[in-house]
Image (tube, rainbow over all chains, first blue to last red; front, side, top):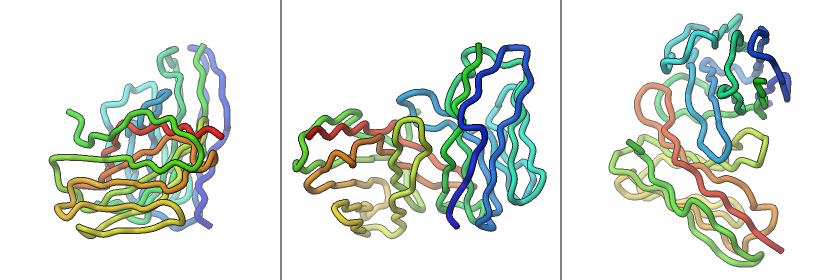
Length: 114
Length: 110
């Protein structure tokens, strides 16, 4: 199983809403990532979890709150987002959080903030 | 500072043509990955190159890693409409993060 799954596929929310994005992998990977991708741009790293601990936060605003309940799950809690936060949010995982490890991406959640 | 320069940014060709996408850097990477992404989907890993001078083939796709591990190329032979997508190179250096190129949008027309 080399699959990373993400739910929901699409999400529309208002600026006062609270929602969560979910990501799951069953490959036994110990590093998980959240990326944000705008149209026609490469993915931008947001957070890295290494062995269920937050190891990298790329200066992401606090309206984005990651959570790693266990080694297979990664959540991204959203609150008071802005329209400019509309993007494709990608989750990825890799076997170990060391240089050179291949990252496997999920299909993404298309988020629209009204 | 863009650490990975990818070119061309956009390529529109006819089915059956050959093409090459380049990924260049002044930095050394421990490995380099190539992904293909279709609209609204996540990037799909095509290949990882690790050794300087390495060449890997995946059907009609040939990937090369430069001797100094600073650059890479992707060559597609006899392109098909199914090859259409955004091609991303990503270099691994340092702790667990990838540096992405800006991507090459490939459009293959029948």
